[in-house]
Each structure stands twice: as C-alpha cells, then as structure tokens.
Amino acid sequence: MSGMTFRERLDQGSAILADGAMGTLLHARGVPIEACFDELNLSSPALVLGIHTAYLDAGAEVIETNTFGANRFKLAEYGLEDRVAEINRAGVRLARQAIKESGRADAYVAGSVGPLGVRLAPFGRVSAEQAREAFREQIAALCDAGADLIILETFSDLAELREAAHAAREVCDLPIVAQVTFTRDDRTLLGDTPQQAALALADLDVDLIGANCSGGPAQIMRVVQQMRAALPPDAPVRFSAMPNAGWPENVGGRVMYASGPGYFAEYAVALREHGVSLIGGCCGTTPEHIAYMRRALDERGSSPVVWVGDVDDSNGEEVAEPPAPSELAKKLARGDFVIAVEVSPPRGIAAEKTMRAAQSLRDAGADAIDVTDSPMARMRMSPWAVCALLQERAGVETVLHFPTRGRNLLRIQGDLLAAHALHIRNLFVVMGDPTHIGDYPDAADNYDIVPSGLIRLIKHNLNRGLDWAGNPIGQPTNFLVSAALNLNAPDIEREIRVLCKKIEGGVDYVLTQPLFDAADFDSFMERFEAANGPLKLPVLVGVMPLYSIRHARFLHNEVPGITIPEPILQRIEAAGPDAPAEGVRIAQELAEALRERAAGLYIMPQFGRYDLAADIVEHVRRLG
Image 1 (cartoon, rainbow, N blue to C red):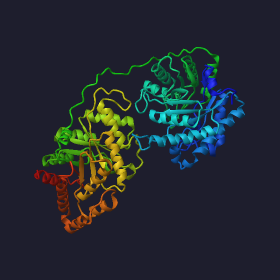
Image 2 (cartoon, rainbow, N blue to C red):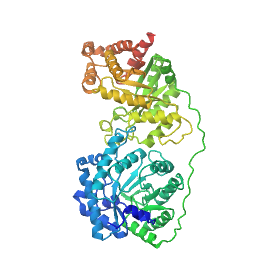
Image 3 (cartoon, rainbow, N blue to C red):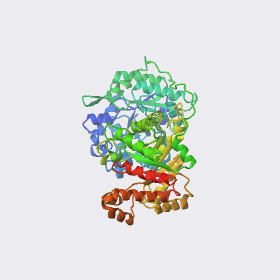
Image 4 (cartoon, one colour):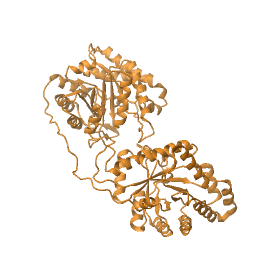
C-alpha cells in the first residue's frame, strides 16, 4: 500500500488512473459468459491474479476486486449465496497479493460493488431494507479484508445506489466512489438524466461521483460535463469516469469494442484537463488501453479532443391538459353496475371472429371487453392491436391487459404511451403468466417492475405528465387502472397487504379471480375491514361459467385461488351433457347475489364460448 491514504492521494490534485475491465479479460481467457466470474476468486485465483498484475504493470494506481456481482442475490443464481463473505475477502486478498508481488507501493485496492440484479420496491419485490442489508454484507467483507476504497459502479437505479452508499457508510469510513451508467440517449435505464443523477449523488456521503460503462469515452465526457454543470460551481464534488471501449458489437460470434488504446489516451488527458479525479476503463478495455492512458497522463500534454457542450434535449412542448376520462371510468364514478367480459386475441392474423364476439357482447349489454395478453404464455396477436380494432370497428370500449413480465422499464413506458396514443385508456395491470408454461419456455421472462410499482408509475407519473424519472412527457395520460385480487388466496393476510400496496399506488378498481360462492366475497371484505376499515375500492367479481364436470374439477383441484363448493360440483355433474347451460344458470344466480355487494362483474368465458357470457350479461341487464 502507498504511504499515503487514497484520500491524501486525491488531495494531491493530479488524476488517478484506475484499471480496466475484468470480465472482458476473463471471458477472453476462456471463461464462459454464463459462469460466475466472482467465484473464480476461489476456484481460479491464478487467473484473477494474472489480470490484476497485468493492469499494475500497465501503470494502474487503482485495481478493482473481482467482486462486481458478489452479493447474495446474484450469487444465489449459482447456489453461492452463503459464500458472500468468502468470495469478497478472496477478491481483496488477490488484489493485495498482486500489488505486493508487483512492488507497487503506490497502488490501491478498490472493492468493486455492482447492482444487486433485482428490482427494488415499489417497482420490484425487494425492499430498501433488504437491499441495504445485502450491500452491508458484501461491503463489510470487502472492508474487513483490507480494501482501500469502495467503488459502487454501473448503477442505473438511483434509489438502489443510494442504499448501497448508505450501507457502505454504515460499515466503514473508507472513500466511496458512486458511478451511474447511461444508455445511448444519455439517460439511465430508468430514465434519469446526468443532471438528475448528479443532484442525487451529490447528496450522498461519498468522495467521488461519476459515470462508468455506458458508451465510449466521448459519451462519458459529455455525461460528466452535464453532471458538473448541474451542480453549483463551488460544490465540493470530485468526479470519476470509466467508459467502455465504445458500444459492443457482435462480429463473427465475438463481442468486439471499437475504441482503441490511442483514442482512449486522448480522452484520458481531456478528462484530466476538465477536472476528473479518477479515470479508468470499463467493458472492453484492456491493459493495453491502460498503458496508453498512463503514458499520455505522464506526458502532461494537452488533448486535441473537443469537449462536448451540454445538450438541451427538451422539445419545448408545454404540458397540456389530460384527455377526458374513459366511459368505463365515468360509469364506475357514477356507481353503475359494470360488466366486463374477457376475450382472448386470435392466434393468427384473422380477427373477424373476435370482432363478432365483441359486437355480440356489446349488444347484450357488456360495458367493456377485457383483452388478454398472451394468456397461459401462448403466442397471440398483440392485445393493443385487438383493443384498437374493437374500439374502432366494433364500437366497444376495451381494457388492455398489461403484464409486467418480459418488459423492462423503458419498454413499459413506451408501450403505455403507444397504447394511450391508440386511445386505449383502461388498463388491467398484472404480473403475467410465466413463459415456461407456454409455447416458448425459453423466452425472456425478466421484469423490472411488479404490478403495484407499475400502478404507481402510471397514476403518480404518467397521469401527471411525467415519466418515471420525473421528466415531462408533454401531455398527461389519463389511464384508468385495475389490478387483480384473489378472494380465496391461500394467505389472505398477504393478499390484503398486496392490495393495500396497490391502493397506495392509486389503483382505480380491482378484478377478482373466479368466485363460486358469494359468501367468500363477504368473508374477504370482513377480514379487510377488520384490519384496514371498509374497502372503498370498486370490485368487479370474477364469474366463470362452468362448462363440464371435468372443467370444474380441474379448476377446483389445480388452479390456485379457485374453490368450487361441493353442491356446485354436484349440479354440474348431474347436468351431464347440459353442463354448459347449468354452468350459465349457476353464474346467473351468483350474479344476482352479487348485485348488491359488488361494483360489477368480470365474466371469463372458457373455450371461446362467448355466447354463454352473453347469456349471463343479458340476464343481469334484465334484472335492471
């Protein structure tokens, strides 16, 4: 270790050179991309040690530990969640060994800490407290093992980065570097601008703030300048910059980066000239890049690189008034007894049958058609197209099922704006069926946000004219948002807690799983009221006409949340070939019982028998 601390080295004023990529070199040396790179600290220490040594020989003053993903959440993917401390300590030990063997008394060990790989509440299932505890566990191990500083890097969620910074400060007093990564449009994946990131990071108790990964050096220069410009000139903030070697490209099956060492060297000098204190490389950079940067910084020459000025990406649009509420929203507000019917999109491009079904349901008295999105993870026509067709050609208002599964936060916001542009105003926010049960079990199944978080995004942001990051979108949306409720959930207390989160997020009404006994509705409402007071949210109760005894037994025995009383099963079985008609009669009786209890019905016809749903709708409308 150097005779001076890292903070003392910072106070000298000259730029400090960090190392480059670890994962790039591990992969180039034969480690599969799907392997756990952090575990190599234990199973292949010589491989990791060799990379550290190469960077030290190239002139790096700071080398990062091979621990970017060594937190309990990411390690759990490999069954290594119980070895967090062991892997992180080994990472520091290898970096320290490399420094000792290289004779580099002026070098420092930086404990590398990346995102947890999970989404935090309210957009995910991991609470801020759980996230902070995971960061504390990793950072404590790095500090105990002898790291000189902590680098929090490649974060796209400012809330998650805040928890990481707080956790680091709770377990140690080491210097902390906090870095954000940006997409091609100079925003984080969650939509934050460099200015917003700078303001957020400046409030943290950290030593340096900056950007890493992202695109190449030109983008990082632009981003850092925008971050600096967002803060007062006398703000006591130091900056760091560690760009990728350009945007990665797939060439002949290999991931290639375009930015060469000489190009990097020019930008290293330019970054130093503009006050960046810690300079290094990220994905695609190698010891050769660092060696060129070292020589350029030591020569202390000026850089021919032109500094890119701040960019005003506002479109000058004034925020307009939101569109009028949907007809469904008006009916719910008036207290009308609302009936919605679920319809699945066609499997191919022919939508005529779906169109005729919607028209018949409209004529029977249905208020809205709920269009599902890939039910049971089966490939279907886009529900947006179906909603637009039904509204334009069948003259019936629709509700778009909007699952969060399979969508990242950028796509979610873009899809919602597209739906609104197609005059689709009603949404049913759900998690969505897992892909492993459907036609394409290997399809991407990731998600950035849970239903309660998406409800909050829509009601608190988009409907107020803002995106997730708080940037104006020109005109507020006016979505009516519904969510799912399971009246017969195995854990009713948990179901109530989840419902409360959805209510806090601003949900407008809920749709329940199929119900076959009105007493179950009363039971749930009593339990909710005992804990939270009366439920004031409109509830559309799920009604599913049974089709056969086989259908009924399947639902009762294999579908979570559906309970069919024995008398109902007996009626369906006794009906024999007339079971579909008997199923309609049972549904009609239930609808009568619910008319004074619920705000409406959510009818879910099976096997494409929309005629049975129409019979139920007509019966309810005749009751007045």
